[in-house]
Image 1 (tube, one colour):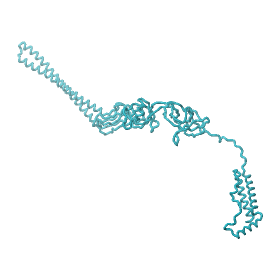
Image 2 (tube, helix red, strand yellow):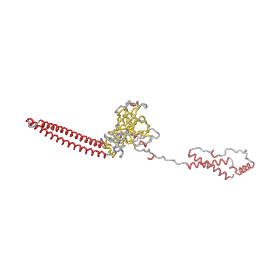
Image 3 (cartoon, one colour):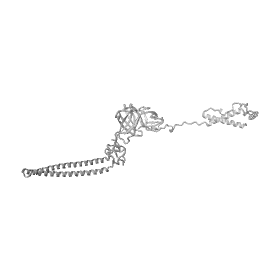
Image 4 (cartoon, helix red, strand yellow):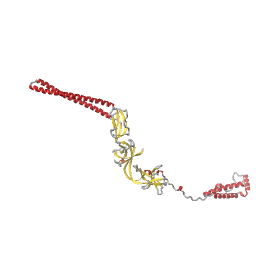
Length: 471
C-alpha cells in the first residue's frame, strides 16, 4: 500500500465518520464508530494462511510508509474524520425556526349546521304486538236467481265499489221475452172469453126476464079462467130453465175470469224471471271476487261474485292466553304494514273469541279497520294493541341513528358545541300523526331534557364540532 492509498482510505473513513457524526448530530444521537469496523487490535499472524512471503511483504509496506504507518496513521485519519464531521454538522445544522402564529386553517372547523331538540319525558303507550290477515267483516256470495241461462254481460270487476241494487251481470233473456209475449197473448184470449161469457149471461138474464113477464101474465089469465092450467105449467118450466141459464152464464164468466187471472199470473212470473236475469248487488260494498264470465251458463246456487258488505274489513290476529287478560273490547290498535311504510291506520278490538285453540293455546282477536283504499282482503298487517301507558323518555325518530355494527346511537350536544355519540336502547315507537313526527322511546342511554341532534345526525361522528340551529 502506498502513502496515497493509505491517505485516501483514511479520508474515506474520516468522511464516513464525519457524515455519520453530522447525521447523528441532527438526530441528537451518539456517534457510532463501531459500525465502520476500525482495527482496534493486532491481527493474529498465526492464521493457517500465513506464509513467510506474506510477512516480508507486510514488512516492506511498513518500511515504505514510515511514521505514517501503524498507530500514527490511524490517529491522523481519525482526527481528520472528526474535523470533517464537525464541519458537516455546522453546515447541516438547520436555521432557527421562527414561531408561526396559528392561521385560520388550523382553527377547528364545524362539521355543519344541525337541528337540535330536547329529549322529552312523555307518556309512552304499552302495547302488545301481533300480526294477522285482513278479511271481510261480512263477505256476501252473489248467485244468479235464474238457472240455465247464459251470461250475456258482466258490468263490474274485482275491486269495484257498488251500491245496493246495482246490476253486476246480465243473463240472456231472449227466451223469456218470447214466453212473455205468448203468455200476454193468452191473457188477451182469456179476457175475450170473459166478455163472451158475460154476453151469454146477459142474454140469459134477458130471456129469464121475458119468461118471468110471460109467466106472470099467464098466471093472471089462468086465474080468470082464460088460460088452462097446463099452459101455465109450461111457462113455469120455461121460467125455471131461463133462470138456470143465468146461473150457468155467471159460472162461465167466473171461469173465464179465473183463466184470465191465471194467464196474468203466468205473465207476472215470466216478468219476475226476466228481472232475475239481472244479477244485482244485495248491499253496498266492494267486489272482492268475480267468477262470472260472458258465455258461461248460470246456475242457481253457484256464486258469480263475492261482495264485501259495507266496505268493512277486519284484521284477525292470534294472541297467547297470557296476553288476553291485558286487552279489552274497544282497546285502541295501531295498524301498520311492513310492506308499505305509508300505511298507518287506527283500529280497535272488535271481538275476542271465547275459546282457545287446543294446541297453541291462542285465541283469535278481531280488530275493526277503517275504510281505506290501501286495504285489501288477504293483506298481512302488524297490530300494536294498547294495554296501558307509562312515563318514558322520547325523542324524534330522526334522532335515532342505526349503526352498521348493530344497535343505535343518539347524538347529544355538549356546551362547547361538540357532539357525543350515546349508545341507546330503544323501546316503543309512536307513528307520525299529521304534523306531529314519529317518536321513539329511549329505554336507556340518555336522560330527559338533554339536547339531541335531529336533522343532520346521520352525518356526524363522535366529537364533531357543529353549529346548532333551533327547529
